[in-house]
Length: 198
Image (cartoon, rainbow, N blue to C red; front, top):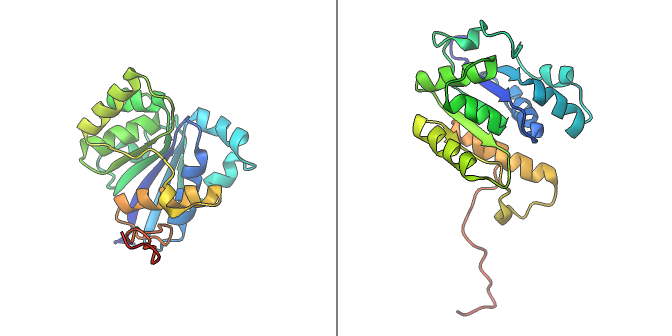
């Protein structure tokens, strides 16, 4: 389809594979979107630790799946036009490799390509606390053009489940990709207490 928007979803080695999974689920329901998935080796390990799913279950959510070792895949070339990439979650190792153009696997190579082609790269780092080296890498990634979007809960939405927190973060990241979802409880201003007169 000529007007199909192609997005790369990278699932890195940090805790938080649920964000990548949910991104694939939501994008799978958008008619004009094609998803390209690449997962790091550590992400595959985290799937077993953090979910009841198998890697194959997650791969089934994507339109195209690429091995992290397949550095000759289409998403490794700038001539393959995409609308951008989201790395969810992004480990500090992934971050360091992206910042230093150390593209020794497909995840970091694809991210490097997105940056060099001036396309949108959103990184969802999931680490805490952060030392000065982490903060420096985040600054440098931002200076290169990446958007840093840590998956931090928004408490003004009054989330009651983990799904609420995940969906809000996923919705806000997809806002950055100009994809409208029904996931975001958009701020309408503070609630007004009619009993107060101050």
